[in-house]
Length: 93
Image (cartoon, rainbow, N blue to C red; front, side, top):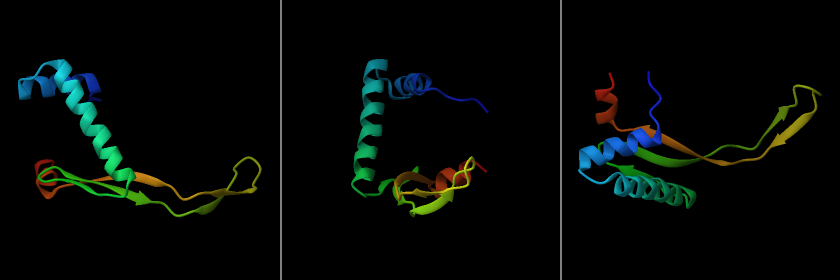
């Protein structure tokens, strides 16, 4: 399994969409920023045939500091989750 970089993804987008690399970079950056903005507001972003980006709120918990054994409160936070569409899941089988 290869680790694809953002630059390689931009290059692939430029080739497939017949765009300049500069325009592809702008489009990818805009997509990422837009998804983050919507999820920050608590919205789910659905890309039909690809998947859903959604906010997930973790529960506040108490953990133990491994060095001291003292309890440490871990606050609740919102994280980004991605759930692939059935189409994508079937293609990856």
